[in-house]
Length: 553
Image (cartoon, rainbow, N blue to C red; front, side, top):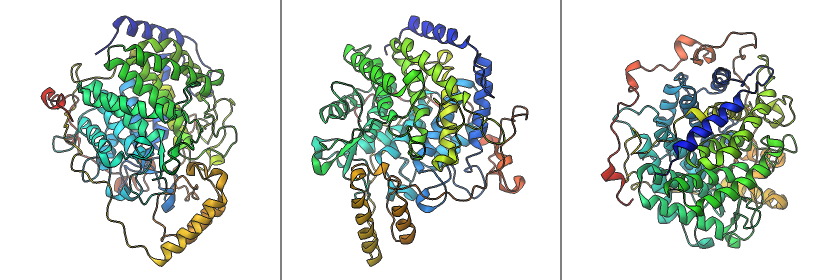
């Protein structure tokens, strides 16, 4: 694999120089490595207060939700994104406090086929949703996160299962000359939409599997996915902006030119892994250069992360969008490890952006709650965007943790100490579409009302993710439970009553690593307990078999 020890040392030195500059935040300090770790520890603690999957009777792996069932603000995929954030947090800080929570959550959501298509979510499943869980599994393998017990699916095999299900012909039809659809079940709103994030997840996982296993088949599919995104003009050939998607009925020519930050960042990271896998290909270097230049210019005005499509108007960002900043920070940080030539451009920007992020974390009773609007320099309560703030908190945790990237080992591979066991056949027996339930009269009536409302919002209809209409929400409420369809991108459901315990105050000493009992209604009865012997020691599992991983998948 392509690597440069000299570049790696230079990268660490560059970041070390940046850390000398002390930042006078209201609560969080990030001027030294010790301050970064301490701040990250508190941020991780506070984020865990938003999570109830470790409590008896609750579902491991997911944040409170989904809004369509009035259970909370968050959709299934964001739980997977949060697990990935904690996997990076563990690697970068060495804090193992939440590893068992991550282990439990990641395994609980794999589904019967061990492919991150659990039956509870199969009727509302997007390729991007599955992809986010797959990327977190891939991250666990790359970071050498402790392996699951031998009788459980392994991290590398889970990532391979997600990739294999998405590589199947039924996910890639001839509409728009290829590419994956946004949604998996044909009954879902958005099934007629082919977008960047679904294909970006597939590209990203494939490029990382290629580097980890050395298998050229993954790289071949990654190259083909890039070419499809390029040929369909989702990547602007002049500006190198990354657009959101288009509809198959228009041959994907009705391109929605919204530029979400995570679309660009997921391609940059995937391209960086391809650059590394190809031993420094000039083709991939040029692609990274141009994408990175456009991304830093577009999403980091004055070097501070800014979500262009929605941040200009408070309340315009959906719950999904409110979590994008953290992914961008994490993915760009890892890019500097596998494509070291990017470090001089990326690391100073991430440093300054993180300074702005922690500066606004002054809210709540604790005096340290974080908001979304970093560039303003002041805390804006997440209530303005109708969320409890998990995405906003996760963003800052990711940004702060990522400042430690210069001292971290690059992502592992089979040949550089990877400990996760693979299975190239994982996912081959998975099936996409369950038998649809019979359509009732109520369903037809509800569909008619919803069709009318969507058509009435025609200026926004090309991108359901943007529609946030109170009228549509009221119709959904009236029709529940007859409508059982993916609707997260049509409206933001009302929040349930927030039963969260009060956050610790700013005067409180650094919290203990395990935060779970503070959230329990009755700590002794309600805290989910796991025997200590359940978790394997770090590095216990065997390495992947090269003979298995090197054959065609």
